[in-house]
Length: 499
Image 1 (cartoon, one colour):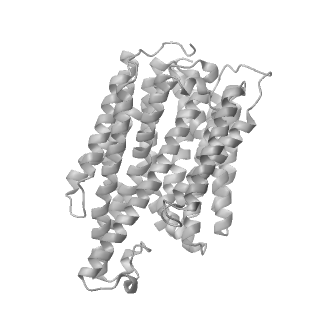
Image 2 (cartoon, one colour):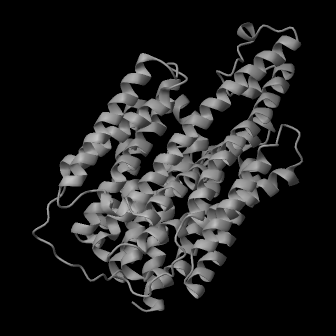
Image 3 (cartoon, one colour):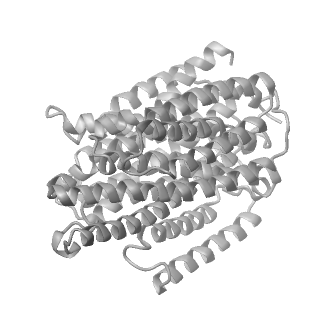
């Protein structure tokens, strides 16, 4: 495919990727109103998010492997159909139980769309040329991550729309992308009738990861870090994933190709991706909460204040992508990106409820630039080492580990934040001579506006001051990414689509 035809097909793929990513971020702001309107509980609130993440993360390597065995275009159309139907079902949900079930199905579609877009781009464009197009992918991810909450706040606040349109809004765009791809996407498909899908390996991976994510979701809240529940869930997950490794080492067509993951560069790229995944997922989640609760801004204002993060990803991913295509070298941009990411998190670790917005913006810009320079280029490192027949499984593996790291990171950082906030609120109220239990504000509710002014000030200061602690942890994890990227082999990207 020449440049003009690639851009035509890419426009449909980017719409699909944007819709898949924004489906999570657009709901994040509206979720309190959604659960309230459906008479749901705090536990169900958590499950609406967890169900989507579980289904999406656990199914990603399976979709990646299927893309190596069957028609990539057909799989993408199936995933689009699954996503559209589940989105409509979510919009019409009449109870939280229904919403949780439909969001799990939507998670399957979202996981498929995210990995299949990367697989199809890899099948169309050589690694050396892919850098310039990866810039567009990074930009779309940035806009979806930061623009989603802004759009969600607007839809929920608009009386003529309402929260159900947070789900319906994706449908027309997805259908438009499906029509565009039917007309513009033409891939040379290789039929492999003798292949078999590793259903046992896929099931073990999905079960092991799901159990691990369930533990991360509930530990620290429903039970302690050191408890019999932790032993059972973590131990069970290790046993199941160990069995999955044994199966993957023996079968002819593994879901996660261990011979690829074991190699030096793919293994290092996966480790670095865990750190970048935490930045991509955690940065926007906790910064939005910092601006709304810690600083008292509205959801729309909070979305606008996170523009430096989005701008950093958008500009750096585009510029770095073009430089990668021009030089054929990828390691310098990854190393620089992860170093800037660590410095950005270090800058954010000093923020509190009175930090000047310029200082917060500089930290966010550093995080954004770091994510933009490293995220897609780490995928490129992995894709450059495998033949076209394994590109789906390899792309699925790195996307899977990035999502897993991001999900676990957000959960752990959230637990640390909750602990810090509870302690700071209790200390602040004690100084005012108020009993935290009697005030009803011990961190169990986020409805700050309904609290008395004195307590509001304590709660806002607690959230504002506690947020810096979690970004210090993020900076330490980013350093792991820096070390992993330094050991990458400085190779040139190949000019051909296949090895």
